[in-house]
Image (cartoon, rainbow, N blue to C red):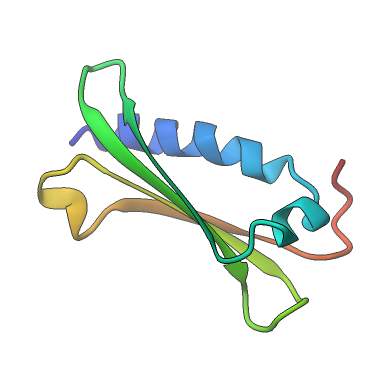
Length: 91
């Protein structure tokens, strides 16, 4: 797997979630967004994003993204996460 390519794809996809408000993310709690994407190299990746409470309901929200290439990295995907607090100044 091209880790640099996978990280770029993951970061681009997570940018959409970073721009969402706390309220919008609350509506996605326990949601699971899985898709297949093809990188510029031609490699097909599986991208997975989950939105969940970080440590308690109605507190901070954690958004976790992971990407793998259906091969050896399936069990150890490239991943990234971020936390949104209720008072974050988002659109």
